[in-house]
Length: 239
Ligand code: SAM
Image: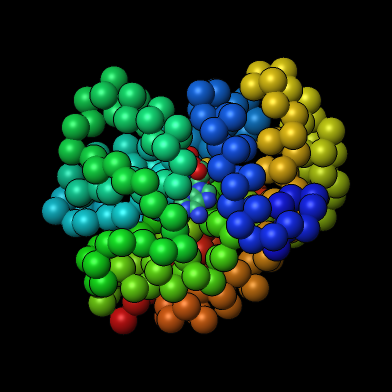
């Protein structure tokens, strides 16, 4: 499997991704603002509007990290479980939840590829900027399908490939030249940000990823590109 710019054994990728997020956890939120010029907030707002969370629903926010999606979902009154493989990211998230008065969230250390939640438990499953870091993506999609109830919905927010002419060159320059430098400046970690950029470049394009969601058993799969597909919302239903 690929770890950004290198081919590595599957266990090795999981370990290295762990190290990346342990390294950046404390500076993760400020980095998101710096790298996206604050745009990640708008993408996340739109994502949660598409999910349409409702009071009383059970929602699993997988790869939930420091809670950005979970906080937005929880405002609806939904019961939200934040799951992530990285305890440091969860710890930062729990601190943020305390500071903001979100006391109903459940925080759970879990690998998206093999969950301990029961079958057909959740009404919705969300994963934002998480799936491309997962080593075995088909396994994670099958697990998403398993833990959802019938009528449950799957939503994924992820970087993809922009189809806008000219834009991809600008983006390539920005991501390969600027992002690692900003990563060094703010988080003192150039390599982690190099990995994150490479993992975006290697992620399957929109039709391919939509097909993978279908192969996991979801129906009515749908893609909503933003900025020509620089970022995309993929969704599907379990019936
Ligand atoms: N969803 C949050 C957001 O949008 O701000 C965090 C996104 S962060 C870029 C990616 C997260 O994926 C990290 O917290 C990382 O620990 C988590 N992650 C990576 N591999 C995972 C796996 N196999 N299972 C669960 N979480 C994983």
